[in-house]
Image 1: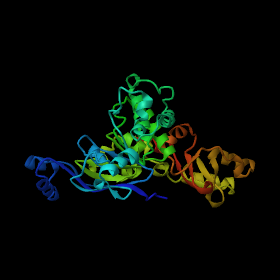
Image 2: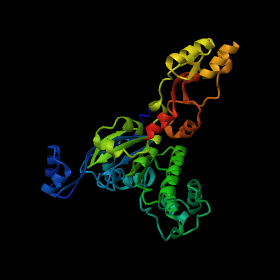
Image 3: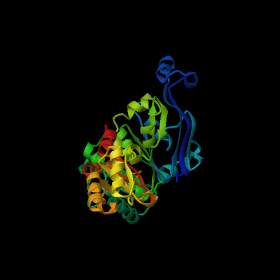
Image 4: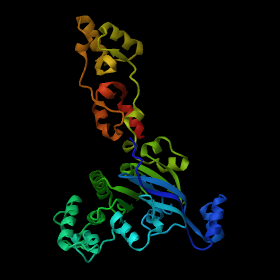
Length: 393
């Protein structure tokens, strides 16, 4: 069931820098693009009519090229930037109306941010950095260090508590940044390209760590990236931005199968489809199906009529029972054996919702196409090695 419990929302958000904001907004409403508006007014349109909702406990990824507006919109959620117009809501409250202690509470207790360049205090140790948010809240040292230690362990830095930040690698520094953001138990994390400065191997490792932590703590995350594979790997839902606008939002699966326009299609063209497409997208009906209780002669006839050398055998209610080859059916007919006695039963099976990446090796090793089964083992279709490989092309 889809979770419709929204924790945050951007509603018709506009951000314009420079003078002549009203004139620039009027031109945008008339259909001019942001570059033309800048040439005529000197005003830079960073965001235009941006709207989306973020569900509680999901990872919502915003992806776009440099200058698309993705880093601008994320900073509106903790009021590091204020929209020119439109509304940013957190827990149903307009964050722009928060002042003084209320705004401080939002930033300290409810919404934490992880930056691309780490943003760590280089003169402090690992544990001092992680505990910093608790320190400014006046939490006693012993209590804040105890809590910080829990999160240091969670991000895999146990034993590094007293090390200076300067001795850490890029990946380790970002682990410290994540631990520091989590230690205050915020409701939502804002992550602005946190892994883009890391080398590919460390980046993949950090993506895995983030997914593991998020599933464990069930935090809401708004994640910014320019990498489509990172977006599809991490995002429960993804929004693509271009020239300050949201072009399309949806699940990675929805975007891959139904891109909104050529820009989206070209943007996701290089994506690793194995982390997006599911078995249901590449499966097909077996060319020949026989009941396990039919005679071997009948099975031979079915295979010859369909010009195939094997058939998928089913029982009551289409329950998958195994595969029978033409040779085995002929042997059973000659030796007067029941068909079920010559079935090959150790056939690999999978489900419709399984990601392609999870069956690649299984498909490569399988003698027959993989059987796709549903409730109570009901045969839904099959997946061949060729259909898996062609989906990745």
